[in-house]
Amino acid sequence: MRMRLVEKPKDPAVLLAELQAEVEARDPRPVYMRSAMWATGGSSALLALGAVTPNVEFGSMLSVFSLAGVCGYYTVWGVAHALHSPLMAVTNAISGMTAVGGLVLMNHAPNAGAHILGAGATLISTINISGGFLVTKKMLDMFKRPDDPPEYYEFYAVPAGVLGAGFLVGQSMGYEHIGSVLGVTSGICCVGGIAGLSSQETARMGNTLGMTGVGLGMTATLGSMHFTPGFALETAALLGTGSALGYGIASRVGPTSLPQTVAAFHSLVGLAAVGTAIGDWSAYCADPNDLNMDGVRSMGIVLATGIGSVTATGSLVAYGKLDGSLDSSPMNISGRDQVPPSPNSSLHLKANLLALSMH
View 1 (cartoon, rainbow, N blue to C red):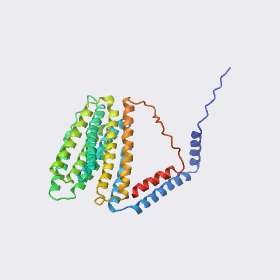
View 2: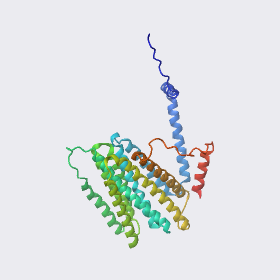
View 3: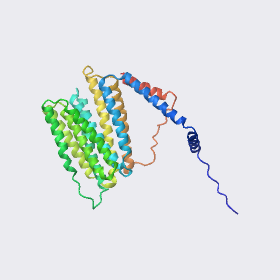
């Protein structure tokens, strides 16, 4: 007696996708129509954004942000699959540029609370920068073969030093806009650092470029600040202590613990963003007449606090799961579904955000 094999029925979602593909193959108009509708929505959003742009500086920052987003997308898209873990490590180290916000907050804080939050953001961001680049180097060293030729990336400290020292000399001679050139160079090096991870041959050069970019960005920020002897000593202590702590932590990490170390370092970036945002709000509350708190700045504080909090908590959970301290199954937090969703939930959220931005 022959046994008949019964074919398992396909999932309805798969059948629907296949049917839609067949329809589109016969009539490509829906594809173009859908694409045109998305483009129309994007165009309308851009016009609305242009209408509410408060000043020229905002438009300039938006241009830089948009171009950086496009560059980042295509840069990361070209990274080799085997180098995704080093990619996360080097982008995490570069994101330690939150130290810039902490330094600026320290320099202009009108009260002790804002100053302390800025100092804390600077310290933990520097830990992330120092430790993050060393973790990236350790990850990339795992791909090295015994017969690979020696590498001398330390030689690139010479052009980086020339740029930094030249900027400081030019600043002291009265060339006020020389910092903008150093900032552009910093951005190019950071993007080049990520692009370097597109292949094994250029990956370690990418890590070097990332370190150069962050170093030049920090130099440009420090060079534009006003220092008193006490503030200079405090800044040097924070940067030196953070660098030493980050290097010391990363030096003790073994090969199997590198991914969770990246997650732990990344939580520091989120905490630094939250601290800087709250410090900025605290500074405004201390002296509302001295600081311009428009809708854009208020929204920036809201977004930095929210996104930074998600980054910090998410990274800590990721660290726990990678380290084995937490169960790897999805977390089921008690009471998370207490509030039933309603059609007006998103409307309420948007209204709250709008109210905060207009405060």
